[in-house]
Length: 219
Image (cartoon, rainbow, N blue to C red):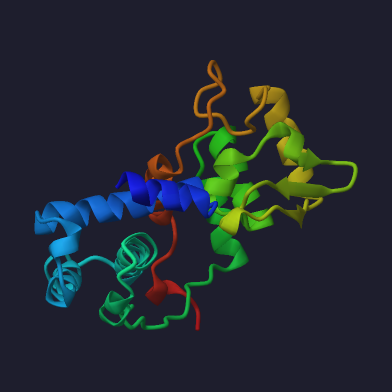
């Protein structure tokens, strides 16, 4: 595991990717309970089927596990012969559910306070990912240029997104109320620490209850 960690760091993988890959390999090691060097193609295929059939993991989660194992065997253990047995499961492409402007307004209006309402409006207006929103700093908001800077976004790439005219007054109102020091949406005002993205999943489930059922929509 230490060799894999060092190889991931050496190749400048993102911290979240390193954590996910190491956890995936750790789960694999606990499942097989044998040294990696003793495992063969049959063990890999069996584990692959176990993730899909018994654990019933989402395809994207299984893909992440396969990516981690491919890195382990090909990049760390130099077992390139295992590549053919570390196949990605077929993914079924589905159209996303697109909310109407009225439904978006209903979701935002359902927020219990200015903190959550501003978070939802920022996500909707800028298209930030959840982790990017959690890392957003006060200094990332450029009201003069009407731009919002995303530092170390997906793939470790910086980018800028336009700051909407309707969003800016809301951000200013929130800033006067919260007075964040560094992180714009801190988990706690006293510490100023950023939110852990994985602990905000309840928000999505909570506000999803406000969305009208598909059959109630006009076609």
